[in-house]
Every structure is written in structure tokens, then in C-alpha cells.
Image 1 (cartoon, rainbow, N blue to C red):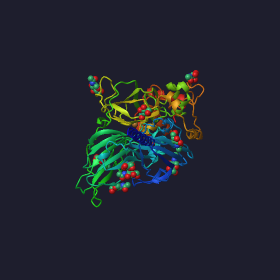
Image 2 (cartoon, rainbow, N blue to C red):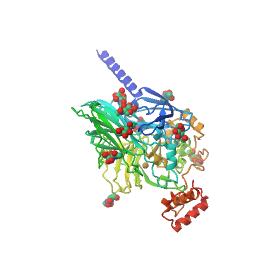
Image 3 (cartoon, rainbow, N blue to C red):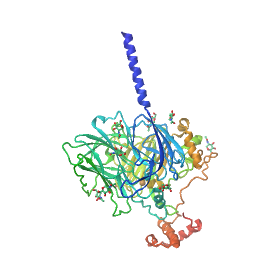
Image 4 (cartoon, helix red, strand yellow):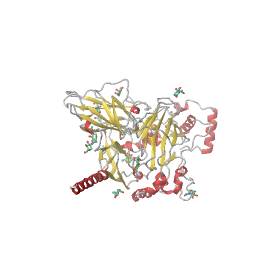
Length: 602
Ligand SMILES: *[C@@H]1O[C@H](CO)[C@@H](O)[C@H](O)[C@H]1NC(C)=O
Ligand SMILES: *[C@@H]1O[C@H](CO)[C@@H](O)[C@H](O)[C@H]1NC(C)=O
Ligand SMILES: *[C@@H]1O[C@H](CO)[C@@H](O)[C@H](O)[C@H]1NC(C)=O
Ligand SMILES: *[C@@H]1O[C@H](CO)[C@@H](O)[C@H](O)[C@H]1NC(C)=O
Ligand SMILES: *[C@@H]1O[C@H](CO)[C@@H](O)[C@H](O)[C@H]1NC(C)=O
Ligand SMILES: *[C@@H]1O[C@H](CO)[C@@H](O)[C@H](O)[C@H]1NC(C)=O
Ligand SMILES: *[C@@H]1O[C@H](CO)[C@@H](O)[C@H](O)[C@H]1NC(C)=O
Ligand SMILES: *[C@@H]1O[C@H](CO)[C@@H](O)[C@H](O)[C@H]1NC(C)=O
Ligand SMILES: *[C@@H]1O[C@H](CO)[C@@H](O)[C@H](O)[C@H]1NC(C)=O
Ligand SMILES: [Cu+2]
């Protein structure tokens, strides 16, 4: 009797252990992806080349179950461009080498090369994947992926999932747009204005729905630039997830989704309705330099209760009042980290360098990709990997100690909004000040929330600040950057080197990752300059363009460069900047600058 009970218990225990093991190990999902050019015309206005996967665009939406291993065999068949792949929002805990950003955790994958990503996913939620090669994803290499959660705390509260993306869209291709964006021809750094807004990579999307049912929308902004106001006429959204973090349910009539942010929300259909309802996504045009009269900044879709009924045009709203995401509370109730071990201060600025182009700066430094990817530097510089100097002078690097509570105080000295994204973590959002508040003042700020929202992408308001905190519990090299792709290209980025000595003991780089470096002629060891002998000698590192000479204004150099060009091409475009004459001091230092630099500002 006693014996039978015992074996019974033992069997139960064995069964429990086995099922635990299978749910932790999960399955392996393998994707063989040939990355190549195909064509797309998502707004119906203009067909253009787009980056496809296995000849397909829009790209495949992935639905992976929590605990599964993902293997992506990437084969770059673009022919004329390098590429890379980042799974946005994943912690990549223990697999920092699989994160994707070029120059940070890996080399660019040259045309003709193959590269394998291999990692497990421990987090549920709504995410997206995209190229992390300079300025590339807006050419089409981006799509949503969701991580299905068998233990979703809200699973009993909805009937079906509806994955949905919004984005801006350009007719011109990124290489050309980037070249003109980062040039003396664009001294103010005006970002290219999108040509259209898309919903699920199309327009006029119809979503069949059934009365009384509740749908779990998973919404991602996979765009390059524009934030989106999103609402569904006649329906309320109940937010239950942001950026992969479950929240306490919060009612919203309209949400504001910056590039790279995601929201999961429940919407219950009306009963007894046979009308259809507009779903609207409206690009925030605050940062648009111009508003062409031909541009429709909105995209509409419909909840289709009845496909024989009409699709009503959405009402035009004068005031857009979105839900304030700062008020969200995480469902797990994780409290504020109330002490800080290490505080990082980042002051954001935009401005011109001596080549006349407009750059973005953290603390006066514009991020410039190092010769050796920072992760490889961390792994190959011995104990010096803890010395921030080895990562170079132009990468805005910070070394984080294991377990520290890290705080980022970000002061935005720019008049634009910027959505900042951290890799490898979500952060607690401790303060987000109103427009024009100025710098963070530790003696004068809004009360810290007791259980702050956590997410991986947070917008800072114009001339204002935010404060975020996270625990350095994920050894790796993690990029922190503005997710407006134009601003990343202009250098609005920093690098967090988290527990580098532990990384040296635990991480090894797969041979195929090193092979793409060799194929691209990129050194894989040593400091940021590739120096392996004296790792404190940064001679030869990549540097930002020369600053403007002292006593010389950006406007001055811009006018000067324009005059030089005008001498060659004699164009009237100069009139704009040239109309305000240079002061004699500006002129003198401009002459001095030319004398020193031989007029070579390109
Ligand atoms: C969506 O409908 C609008 C209005 O009829 C039309 O102007 C637009 O071209 C359509 N978009 C697509 C992709 O068909
Ligand atoms: C590469 O080729 C594609 C397809 O022809 C083209 O659209 C794209 O602009 C090219 N990229 C570069 C950098 O030239
Ligand atoms: C992926 O990584 C796991 C764990 O390191 C390893 O066992 C497996 O062989 C790898 N798969 C591929 C395709 O590289
Ligand atoms: C993902 O797969 C799960 C399990 O099969 C399913 O319940 C869920 O609806 C799917 N989600 C999406 C967005 O396709
Ligand atoms: C959006 O597009 C994805 C990928 O094609 C598709 O799986 C999904 O069902 C679409 N969502 C809706 C609401 O139609
Ligand atoms: C887009 O929608 C907003 C909000 O309803 C409205 O103010 C604006 O006029 C719309 N733009 C166009 C081009 O219809
Ligand atoms: C706190 O900061 C705000 C915004 O900068 C300012 O308007 C206010 O006067 C400050 N209050 C105190 C007590 O310094
Ligand atoms: C990474 O894994 C370690 C060990 O399991 C855990 O303590 C830590 O919280 C994880 N970090 C993240 C960001 O998931
Ligand atoms: C750190 O680098 C310096 C300069 O190259 C070197 O002299 C020193 O031995 C290095 N220290 C370690 C622990 O590797
Ligand atoms: Cu930005």
C-alpha cells in the first residue's frame, strides 16, 4: 500500500519533470531565408524594388511559441548590398552574438555570404524583425513576429488574434535618400518625408469580424520615421501588453505608436451591428519638414461586420488625444528599482560637422561605427575589456557591472521627438517630462511611479527629458539608439558593454559569424581600431567628421559650402542660406578653415 503510493508519487514526479523539460526545451523552428530583391507596390501608387525573403514580399509573419529555438539560415542574395537581421525586443540572454546590429555584435553579411542565427525565445509578446544594416530596413526588410504564450494570463478573455502592422513608406530607395539626407545639401537635417502610410503593408485593409467576439490585436509600428496615431471608430481598446510586457488592462480610444513600439490590446465587437467601422492610422507630421499636397498622411482599414455593407470614410478629427503610455502598469507588479548603482547621462543634440552635413550627438559625440564590432572587442581584449577606452572615442560606450541597477537620464536638447530603443532589455520608465521641460533635475520632477511601465522603446518629448532604469542582468553588448532610422544614420546611438569579463567566459562566436567578417575584410579582434598589441592605442579608429572650427557657426560653414558649390554649379539654391550674410568673424574663421583643410569638406 505504502509502496504503491510511493511509486505512484514517483511516477507523477517523473512525469512532471519530463513535461517541464519539454516545455523549457521547446521545439526548433528553422527558417531558410534567401534575402533578395523583388518588387512591391503596397500603396498602389508606385512599384519599386523591395527586399524580399525567398522571393516574397510582404515578408512572412512569424508566430513562434515561447520556449522554442529559432534557427534562421540567412543567405544574402541581394548581390549589391550587405545585410543583417535583428529580432527586435528579444533579450538574447546568453546569445548576445545573435542580436544583429552591425558593428555592435557582428559584421555586415556581404552579398553571397551566409549567416546563421540560433537562439531560444523565453519571452512572450509582440515583436518585429528587421535588418540592422545602416538604413536598410525601410526598403522592405522588416516584419512583425509574435511569440505565442501558452500561459498568457489574458488567454481566456479573447477569441482570436489579429496581427497588424502600421508603417510609413517611401517610393525612393534608402541608399539614395540617405546620401542626400547626410550631405551638405541638407544642412538642417530635414528627414525625407514619406510618400504614404501603410496598414499591414497595404491600404484599405478589410478585417472580417464577428459580432460579440473579442479580438487580441497585436500592433507593431515597423516604419522608419513617423509615429502613428491609431484608433478604431466606435470601439475601445483595452491595452494588455506593451513591447512584450503584459500590463494591467487600460482603456484607450486612441494610441500613439512610435517607430518600433508595439501594443497588444483587446477589442470586443458590438452585438447586433451590421455596419462596418473604420480603423485609422494617422502619421504624426510634427517632424515632417514639408507636407506635400499630394500626400495622404492617413491609412484606413475596416472592421467588416458585413461585407455587403458600405465602408464609411473616417471622420476627420481636429484634435488627436492619444492615451498616455506612461500611465501603464506592468501586470507582474514589478516595483520601481529604488536605488541606482550607475547613472548614465546622455544629452541629445543635432548639429553640423565640418563636412556641412547634419549629425545627431549624445554628449557631443556622434556614434561612428568602430572597425571591430564592439562585442568582438569585449571578447578579445582580456581584462582591458572592462576599460571603456578600448571601445574607442566615438561609440558612446559605457561598461556596466553585472547586477547593477543602471539609470539613463536622457536630456533632449532638440526640438524633435525621439523614440529610444534599448537592445537586450526592457527599461522601467521612471520619468517622462512634458514638452519644453528642459533637463532632468533630480530635485524637481514628477513623482516616480511605484510600479513603472516597462518597455523597450520610449519617446522623449521636444526639449525635455526621460529617466529609465534596468538591471544589468544580461551579459552582452547592447545598442541604445533612436529608432528613427534617419537619426540612427546620423549617429544617435550608444553602446552598453554589460559584464564583459563574464562574456569572455561564457560566449563563443560561431565560425560562420567570423567568416562573414573575413569575407568583408573586417578584423575580428582587438580594440575599436583593430589594434591587438596595445589595446589602449586607438590609432586608426573610425572617427566622426571634424567639428566646425572654434568661433564658427554651423550656418557659416553651410553658407560657405554652398558658396563653394555655387562656384561650380552656380545654382540659385544658395539664395536660401546665402541670404543671411556672414559676419566678418564667420568669414575670417571660414577662410582659416579652408586654409587648414584645403576646402575639402566632403
Ligand atoms: C485605398 O483607397 C483609396 C480611396 O479609394 C485610394 O485612393 C487608394 O489608392 C487605395 N489604396 C490602395 C493600395 O489600393
Ligand atoms: C541594388 O539593386 C537593387 C535592385 O536592382 C536596386 O533597387 C538598389 O538600389 C541597389 N542598391 C544599391 C546600393 O545600388
Ligand atoms: C543551435 O544551438 C544549439 C545550442 O548551442 C546547438 O545545439 C545547435 O546545434 C545549434 N543549431 C544550429 C543549426 O547551429
Ligand atoms: C500563433 O499561434 C498560436 C498557436 O497556434 C495561435 O493560437 C495564435 O492565434 C497565433 N497568433 C497569430 C498572431 O497568428
Ligand atoms: C496582416 O498581415 C499578416 C502577414 O501577411 C497576416 O498574417 C495577418 O493576418 C494580417 N492581419 C490582418 C488583420 O489582416
Ligand atoms: C488625416 O486624419 C486626421 C485626423 O482625422 C485629419 O486631421 C487629417 O485631415 C487627415 N488627413 C488627410 C489627408 O485626410
Ligand atoms: C521645476 O521645473 C519646471 C520645468 O523646468 C519649472 O517650470 C519649475 O519652475 C521648476 N520648479 C522648481 C520648484 O524649481
Ligand atoms: C538572463 O538570464 C539570467 C539567468 O537566468 C537571469 O537572471 C536574468 O534575469 C536574465 N535577463 C534577462 C534580461 O532576461
Ligand atoms: C591592458 O592593455 C595594456 C596596454 O596594451 C597592457 O599593457 C596590459 O597588459 C593590458 N592588461 C591586461 C590585463 O590585459
Ligand atoms: Cu530620433
